[in-house]
Image (tube, rainbow over all chains, first blue to last red; front, top):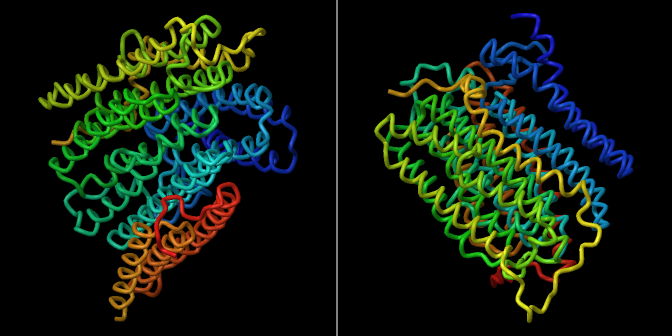
Length: 494
Length: 100
């Protein structure tokens, strides 16, 4: 190992423990301004630290860090490859953007639970970073629970009957999901005596018994409940629509994705021996059904936030396409999709939050005319929507391009058709929202637009604009980032 | 030797818990059912620990201990949320089921 390694351990330690400690500070010392500055500077430091970490991963291949110097099989490993790296970048970028936004939002609405929001956000951040770098099944279970325990109260914080009821539903899904996940982990351990992902991946692939297949089933169903993968999506549209805008942005961009991330992380590699190509096709079909169902529901909603939430159900479906495709190009495409969707979805929810702040509600018919008072914000929302739909020149286009290339290369053209359909439907629901907003307000409209004399607070305007811009900018950097993403990509299955 | 007995018990408990989670709508009952499911998994892990040839395996035992901590935290949070939900809405059964 080389000298760069001296930075790896401190970087990963910082990413996990700095937000955790900040959460404790936030709990003990409730100073809004200080905590907002802390949150923003932690986000900025994370981004800076990720640069050398990315260089190391690029230079040395997937990193395996054995905690406390205890070697496998005794120790607990942290594992960073292209996929984990992309998720860490996404967490840092979205986290920073949302932190800036939240500092403005909590002031604008004089949020009574701003303090709790800050504590939960720090804990969530720590849990997510830990989840993305965990290389051990049981450790993943623990980080998944930390994430859940921070995410559910973020929904409940929005107060009101609907938010509480949505949070309750989310909690029960998450609770049963986590028990199923733990059952899967127990079955794997009973069958193999292993928990570390690198060791599970390194096994001879023919040796998977029926116990392992049941384990993978339990783990997948459990994670699907947490990620709201179709058909276990029931809680997501309610919860993500009821939460406050910064919380919705975090939940949609990061939390749901974290569980979906685990599905592809575990299917490719550790459990490769436990499924057959037919099962992989089935997972792809589930993904496509999610894409179609989520998109069609998004087209039918009458309020803005449920549109965005159903869009998340749809967009998560693409991640499952990696399982039947399982090539390096598909791997790049799916990770890129996760990145672009995360940035764009956060931008979308934050911009929607600004609309709600500006006009007092999010009913689509009432958006008419808001382009005059909130033009930049609306533009950010439209651009984010275009990135989600995957139109050029955004990053979403590159992601879909790679996924379609992978599908055609392997003669599995039906996935290419599904990806195209999904893009078309996404374009439809995005343009439907935008067309509501650019309509002229009807003269008899009962609720005239609230006067926004001072315009939007800059802290509220810039995060969605910049996050949407980042989702577009990813359209230019595909070739540059591809080698980073490809680190640790699974070999093409025969 | 008695491993199968405990395994079957764990399976039964899991099924009972799952049934409760799916059928019961009253919030506290459903939470209890989820706890029964979790206990079944813990029991199964203890069987796994005991069944190793060279003495009990500490790894599943450690997993159970951590799992209990997590289950307690989640249950505590869920109870707090249920109380809050009741205080706000005056209901304990959001889906209007009819088990008492």
